[in-house]
Image (cartoon, rainbow, N blue to C red; front, side, top):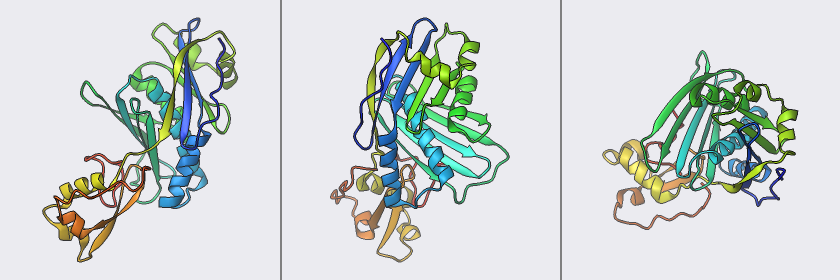
Length: 287
């Protein structure tokens, strides 16, 4: 059957469809990310400043590439990307989970350490098995091309990522028997034309823009960092604002709640928004 575009998604969702092209031994994955990106824009306007045009493009491409990548991974795999763009100095942070079908991210333009090259740092872990890390020097400022460079150098398989239009993205991933040079030489038009051929459907998945952080989780993380010296955090104040480094969601932390370890009353007053214990710090950013 020919590949069909997913229907309209609700705000915050993106449905991707996967197909096997048996003639060329490649996986073809496509989806419309307009609704998912709209959720990011709504989120960042609420908790941070409106992103500039460059940052917005990085995130739009990044969310699309991250979901396309996750959709090709085994269930239960979580991946985090920190992409440092050398010039202009910018950090793009993305994270997602193939089992929970979630993705989130942030862009950092202030306080970014200068460097001599652009790099992609990738950390992945599975439900069964230990974590793995990879660091790849990348060229340019196009996130889709950076993901292609990562696949070539780290995954050891060629993959192509294409922006069909402002909302739709397409990935062509080589399987072991594919002609690598054929995949590398694909143009956007040739890649899109694959969706008109007789492909074998492999299923679909709907990804949601969601972090998973909540006040109780943030409270546990901050207690682990400042439990021995609360004054270092509060500086004589009765409360302090903290934020999740993964999504930017801001939380007001009362000192009384911080010191009442057995209180157990902290609640998640916003479903949007998740930092794990190694990632969150008051005023922090991905490293």
